[in-house]
Amino acid sequence: MKYRNVFRLVLFFFFLTTSFVAQNKSNELKAIWENTKNADSIRFNALADYYKLNNQAQPDSTLLVLEYYYQLAKEKNNSKELYNVANDRGGIYRLKEELDLSMHYYEEAKKLAIKLNDPILKAINLGNIGNVYANKKMYKEALQNFTNSLTIYKEIKDKIGESRMLSSIGNVYLYIQNYDLALAYYQKALTASKNSDVPPRSIAVIYINIGWTNYELKKYTEAIPHYEKALKILEVTNDKFFLVSCYSTLAKIYIELNDLQKAIYFANKNSIISKELKIEGYIDDSEIVFAKIDFKKGNIEEARKKGETILANLDKNSSHELKLKLYDLLYKVYQAENNSKKSLEMYQKYSTYKDSIQLERNKLSLIREVVKNEFDDLLVKNELKLQKEKAELVSKQQQKTIGIVLGSFILIILIIFYFNRNNKKSREKRDELLEEINNLKSNVTSSLVVNTNEYQLVREKIENFIQRKLNETDWNVLNILLKEPDISNKELAEKAFMSVDGIGSSLRRMYLYFDIKESKYKKIALITVAIKASNE
Image 1: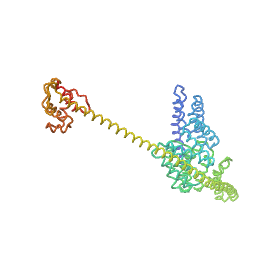
Image 2: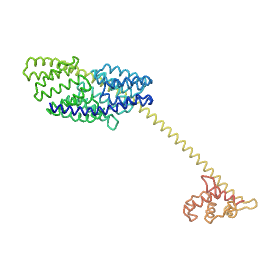
Image 3: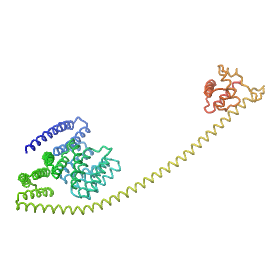
């Protein structure tokens, strides 16, 4: 008892420190959204950050802030922020298990998502409504919403949303006790979350679900590491509703494994947060866990007192599962104390609720088959839809490919035509230049006839024309060109006993001297001008 009180004191100061830090941050955010001089976007971001920080740590306070958020969004006529408020309210009421209120706000969010025509908002809303249906045990409707949401996320390639919906589909199978399929979908959700910005909380929830599935299968040692992975995340994010789930289940696991020291450790943590959340079902469940630990330790009287206290204060609307656990505990306690009358009374009540729960489980077997058939139908419809979309895509790709091939063919024809036309023009230009050269050679002057085969350039006239002296290399090049105007640079270099680079340098100089503008047949143009200069 002394150890337990000391431990609770340590936990109290730990959570007090955490709460103090969170409170400081909350006060800073409040100062931002209440400052009317700040831009609307800054004020809305502060309100959204407050929700993320406190929606599980302080759900009731967060609801009050959401009312302010709503009034501000309404005043600014901001549909997107009104959607966020409705969505956030729905989320808190769902965690508080006030499902009708939760659905009311999600339906408001649905109208705003349609108005905004935003696929991501529609997908989020479908998933949220699916969660409410799942909590109401309307599994067919839940599955329909999750599947529709998943389809949107896949279409827009949103891995975060895809992972969340795969996990939600896994939840449906967990609820109807199809554990193999549940684990398969949780694994798909983890795979989809890799290499993406899936929020840590979402990863933690997947680990919780895998842990709970193993717990239901009584695979206690397999469940523990998944809860431990979840706790590493949730003790940082301080998501109290999820922390309760982890602490409560780990306490029960260690009771089953007869490790009572660890069971007490997690039971204490569970009790503190359950009381902070002020949810009677959580508080009663945590007290039943303490009573079970006392019973396991052999403290029968202490276990009985706790059990009777819980029973005396039990809400008539408490879940059948909670009542079953309590009557089972009291039945065993009275039996251990040899109180046959009380033991029989508790056993009868235990049997009543066990039969009721078994009836629910029998219904689940039927629901499991219906959901399986419904989901198979959905898969077939989605497969047909995907096949149709794939066929349309292939058709479009084929049309696009044909268009590209046809366009490329036409382009190639045009390019060939263009180059042939240019080559023809170039050949005609070359022939004209060569013909001009021959004519110039044939008609030196009107008074002197010269044999074209013996035609010689007049160096003096050429040098006067260009107003500079020609060196021997350039003069030699001109005389070779006189005989072969369309000779290649390589052949010209061989005949002039020079390198190709040397010929290139000589030609570039003379193009400059003679002011040659021709781009394709510069050598022919060069000798043409030289002959004209020589003939003057």
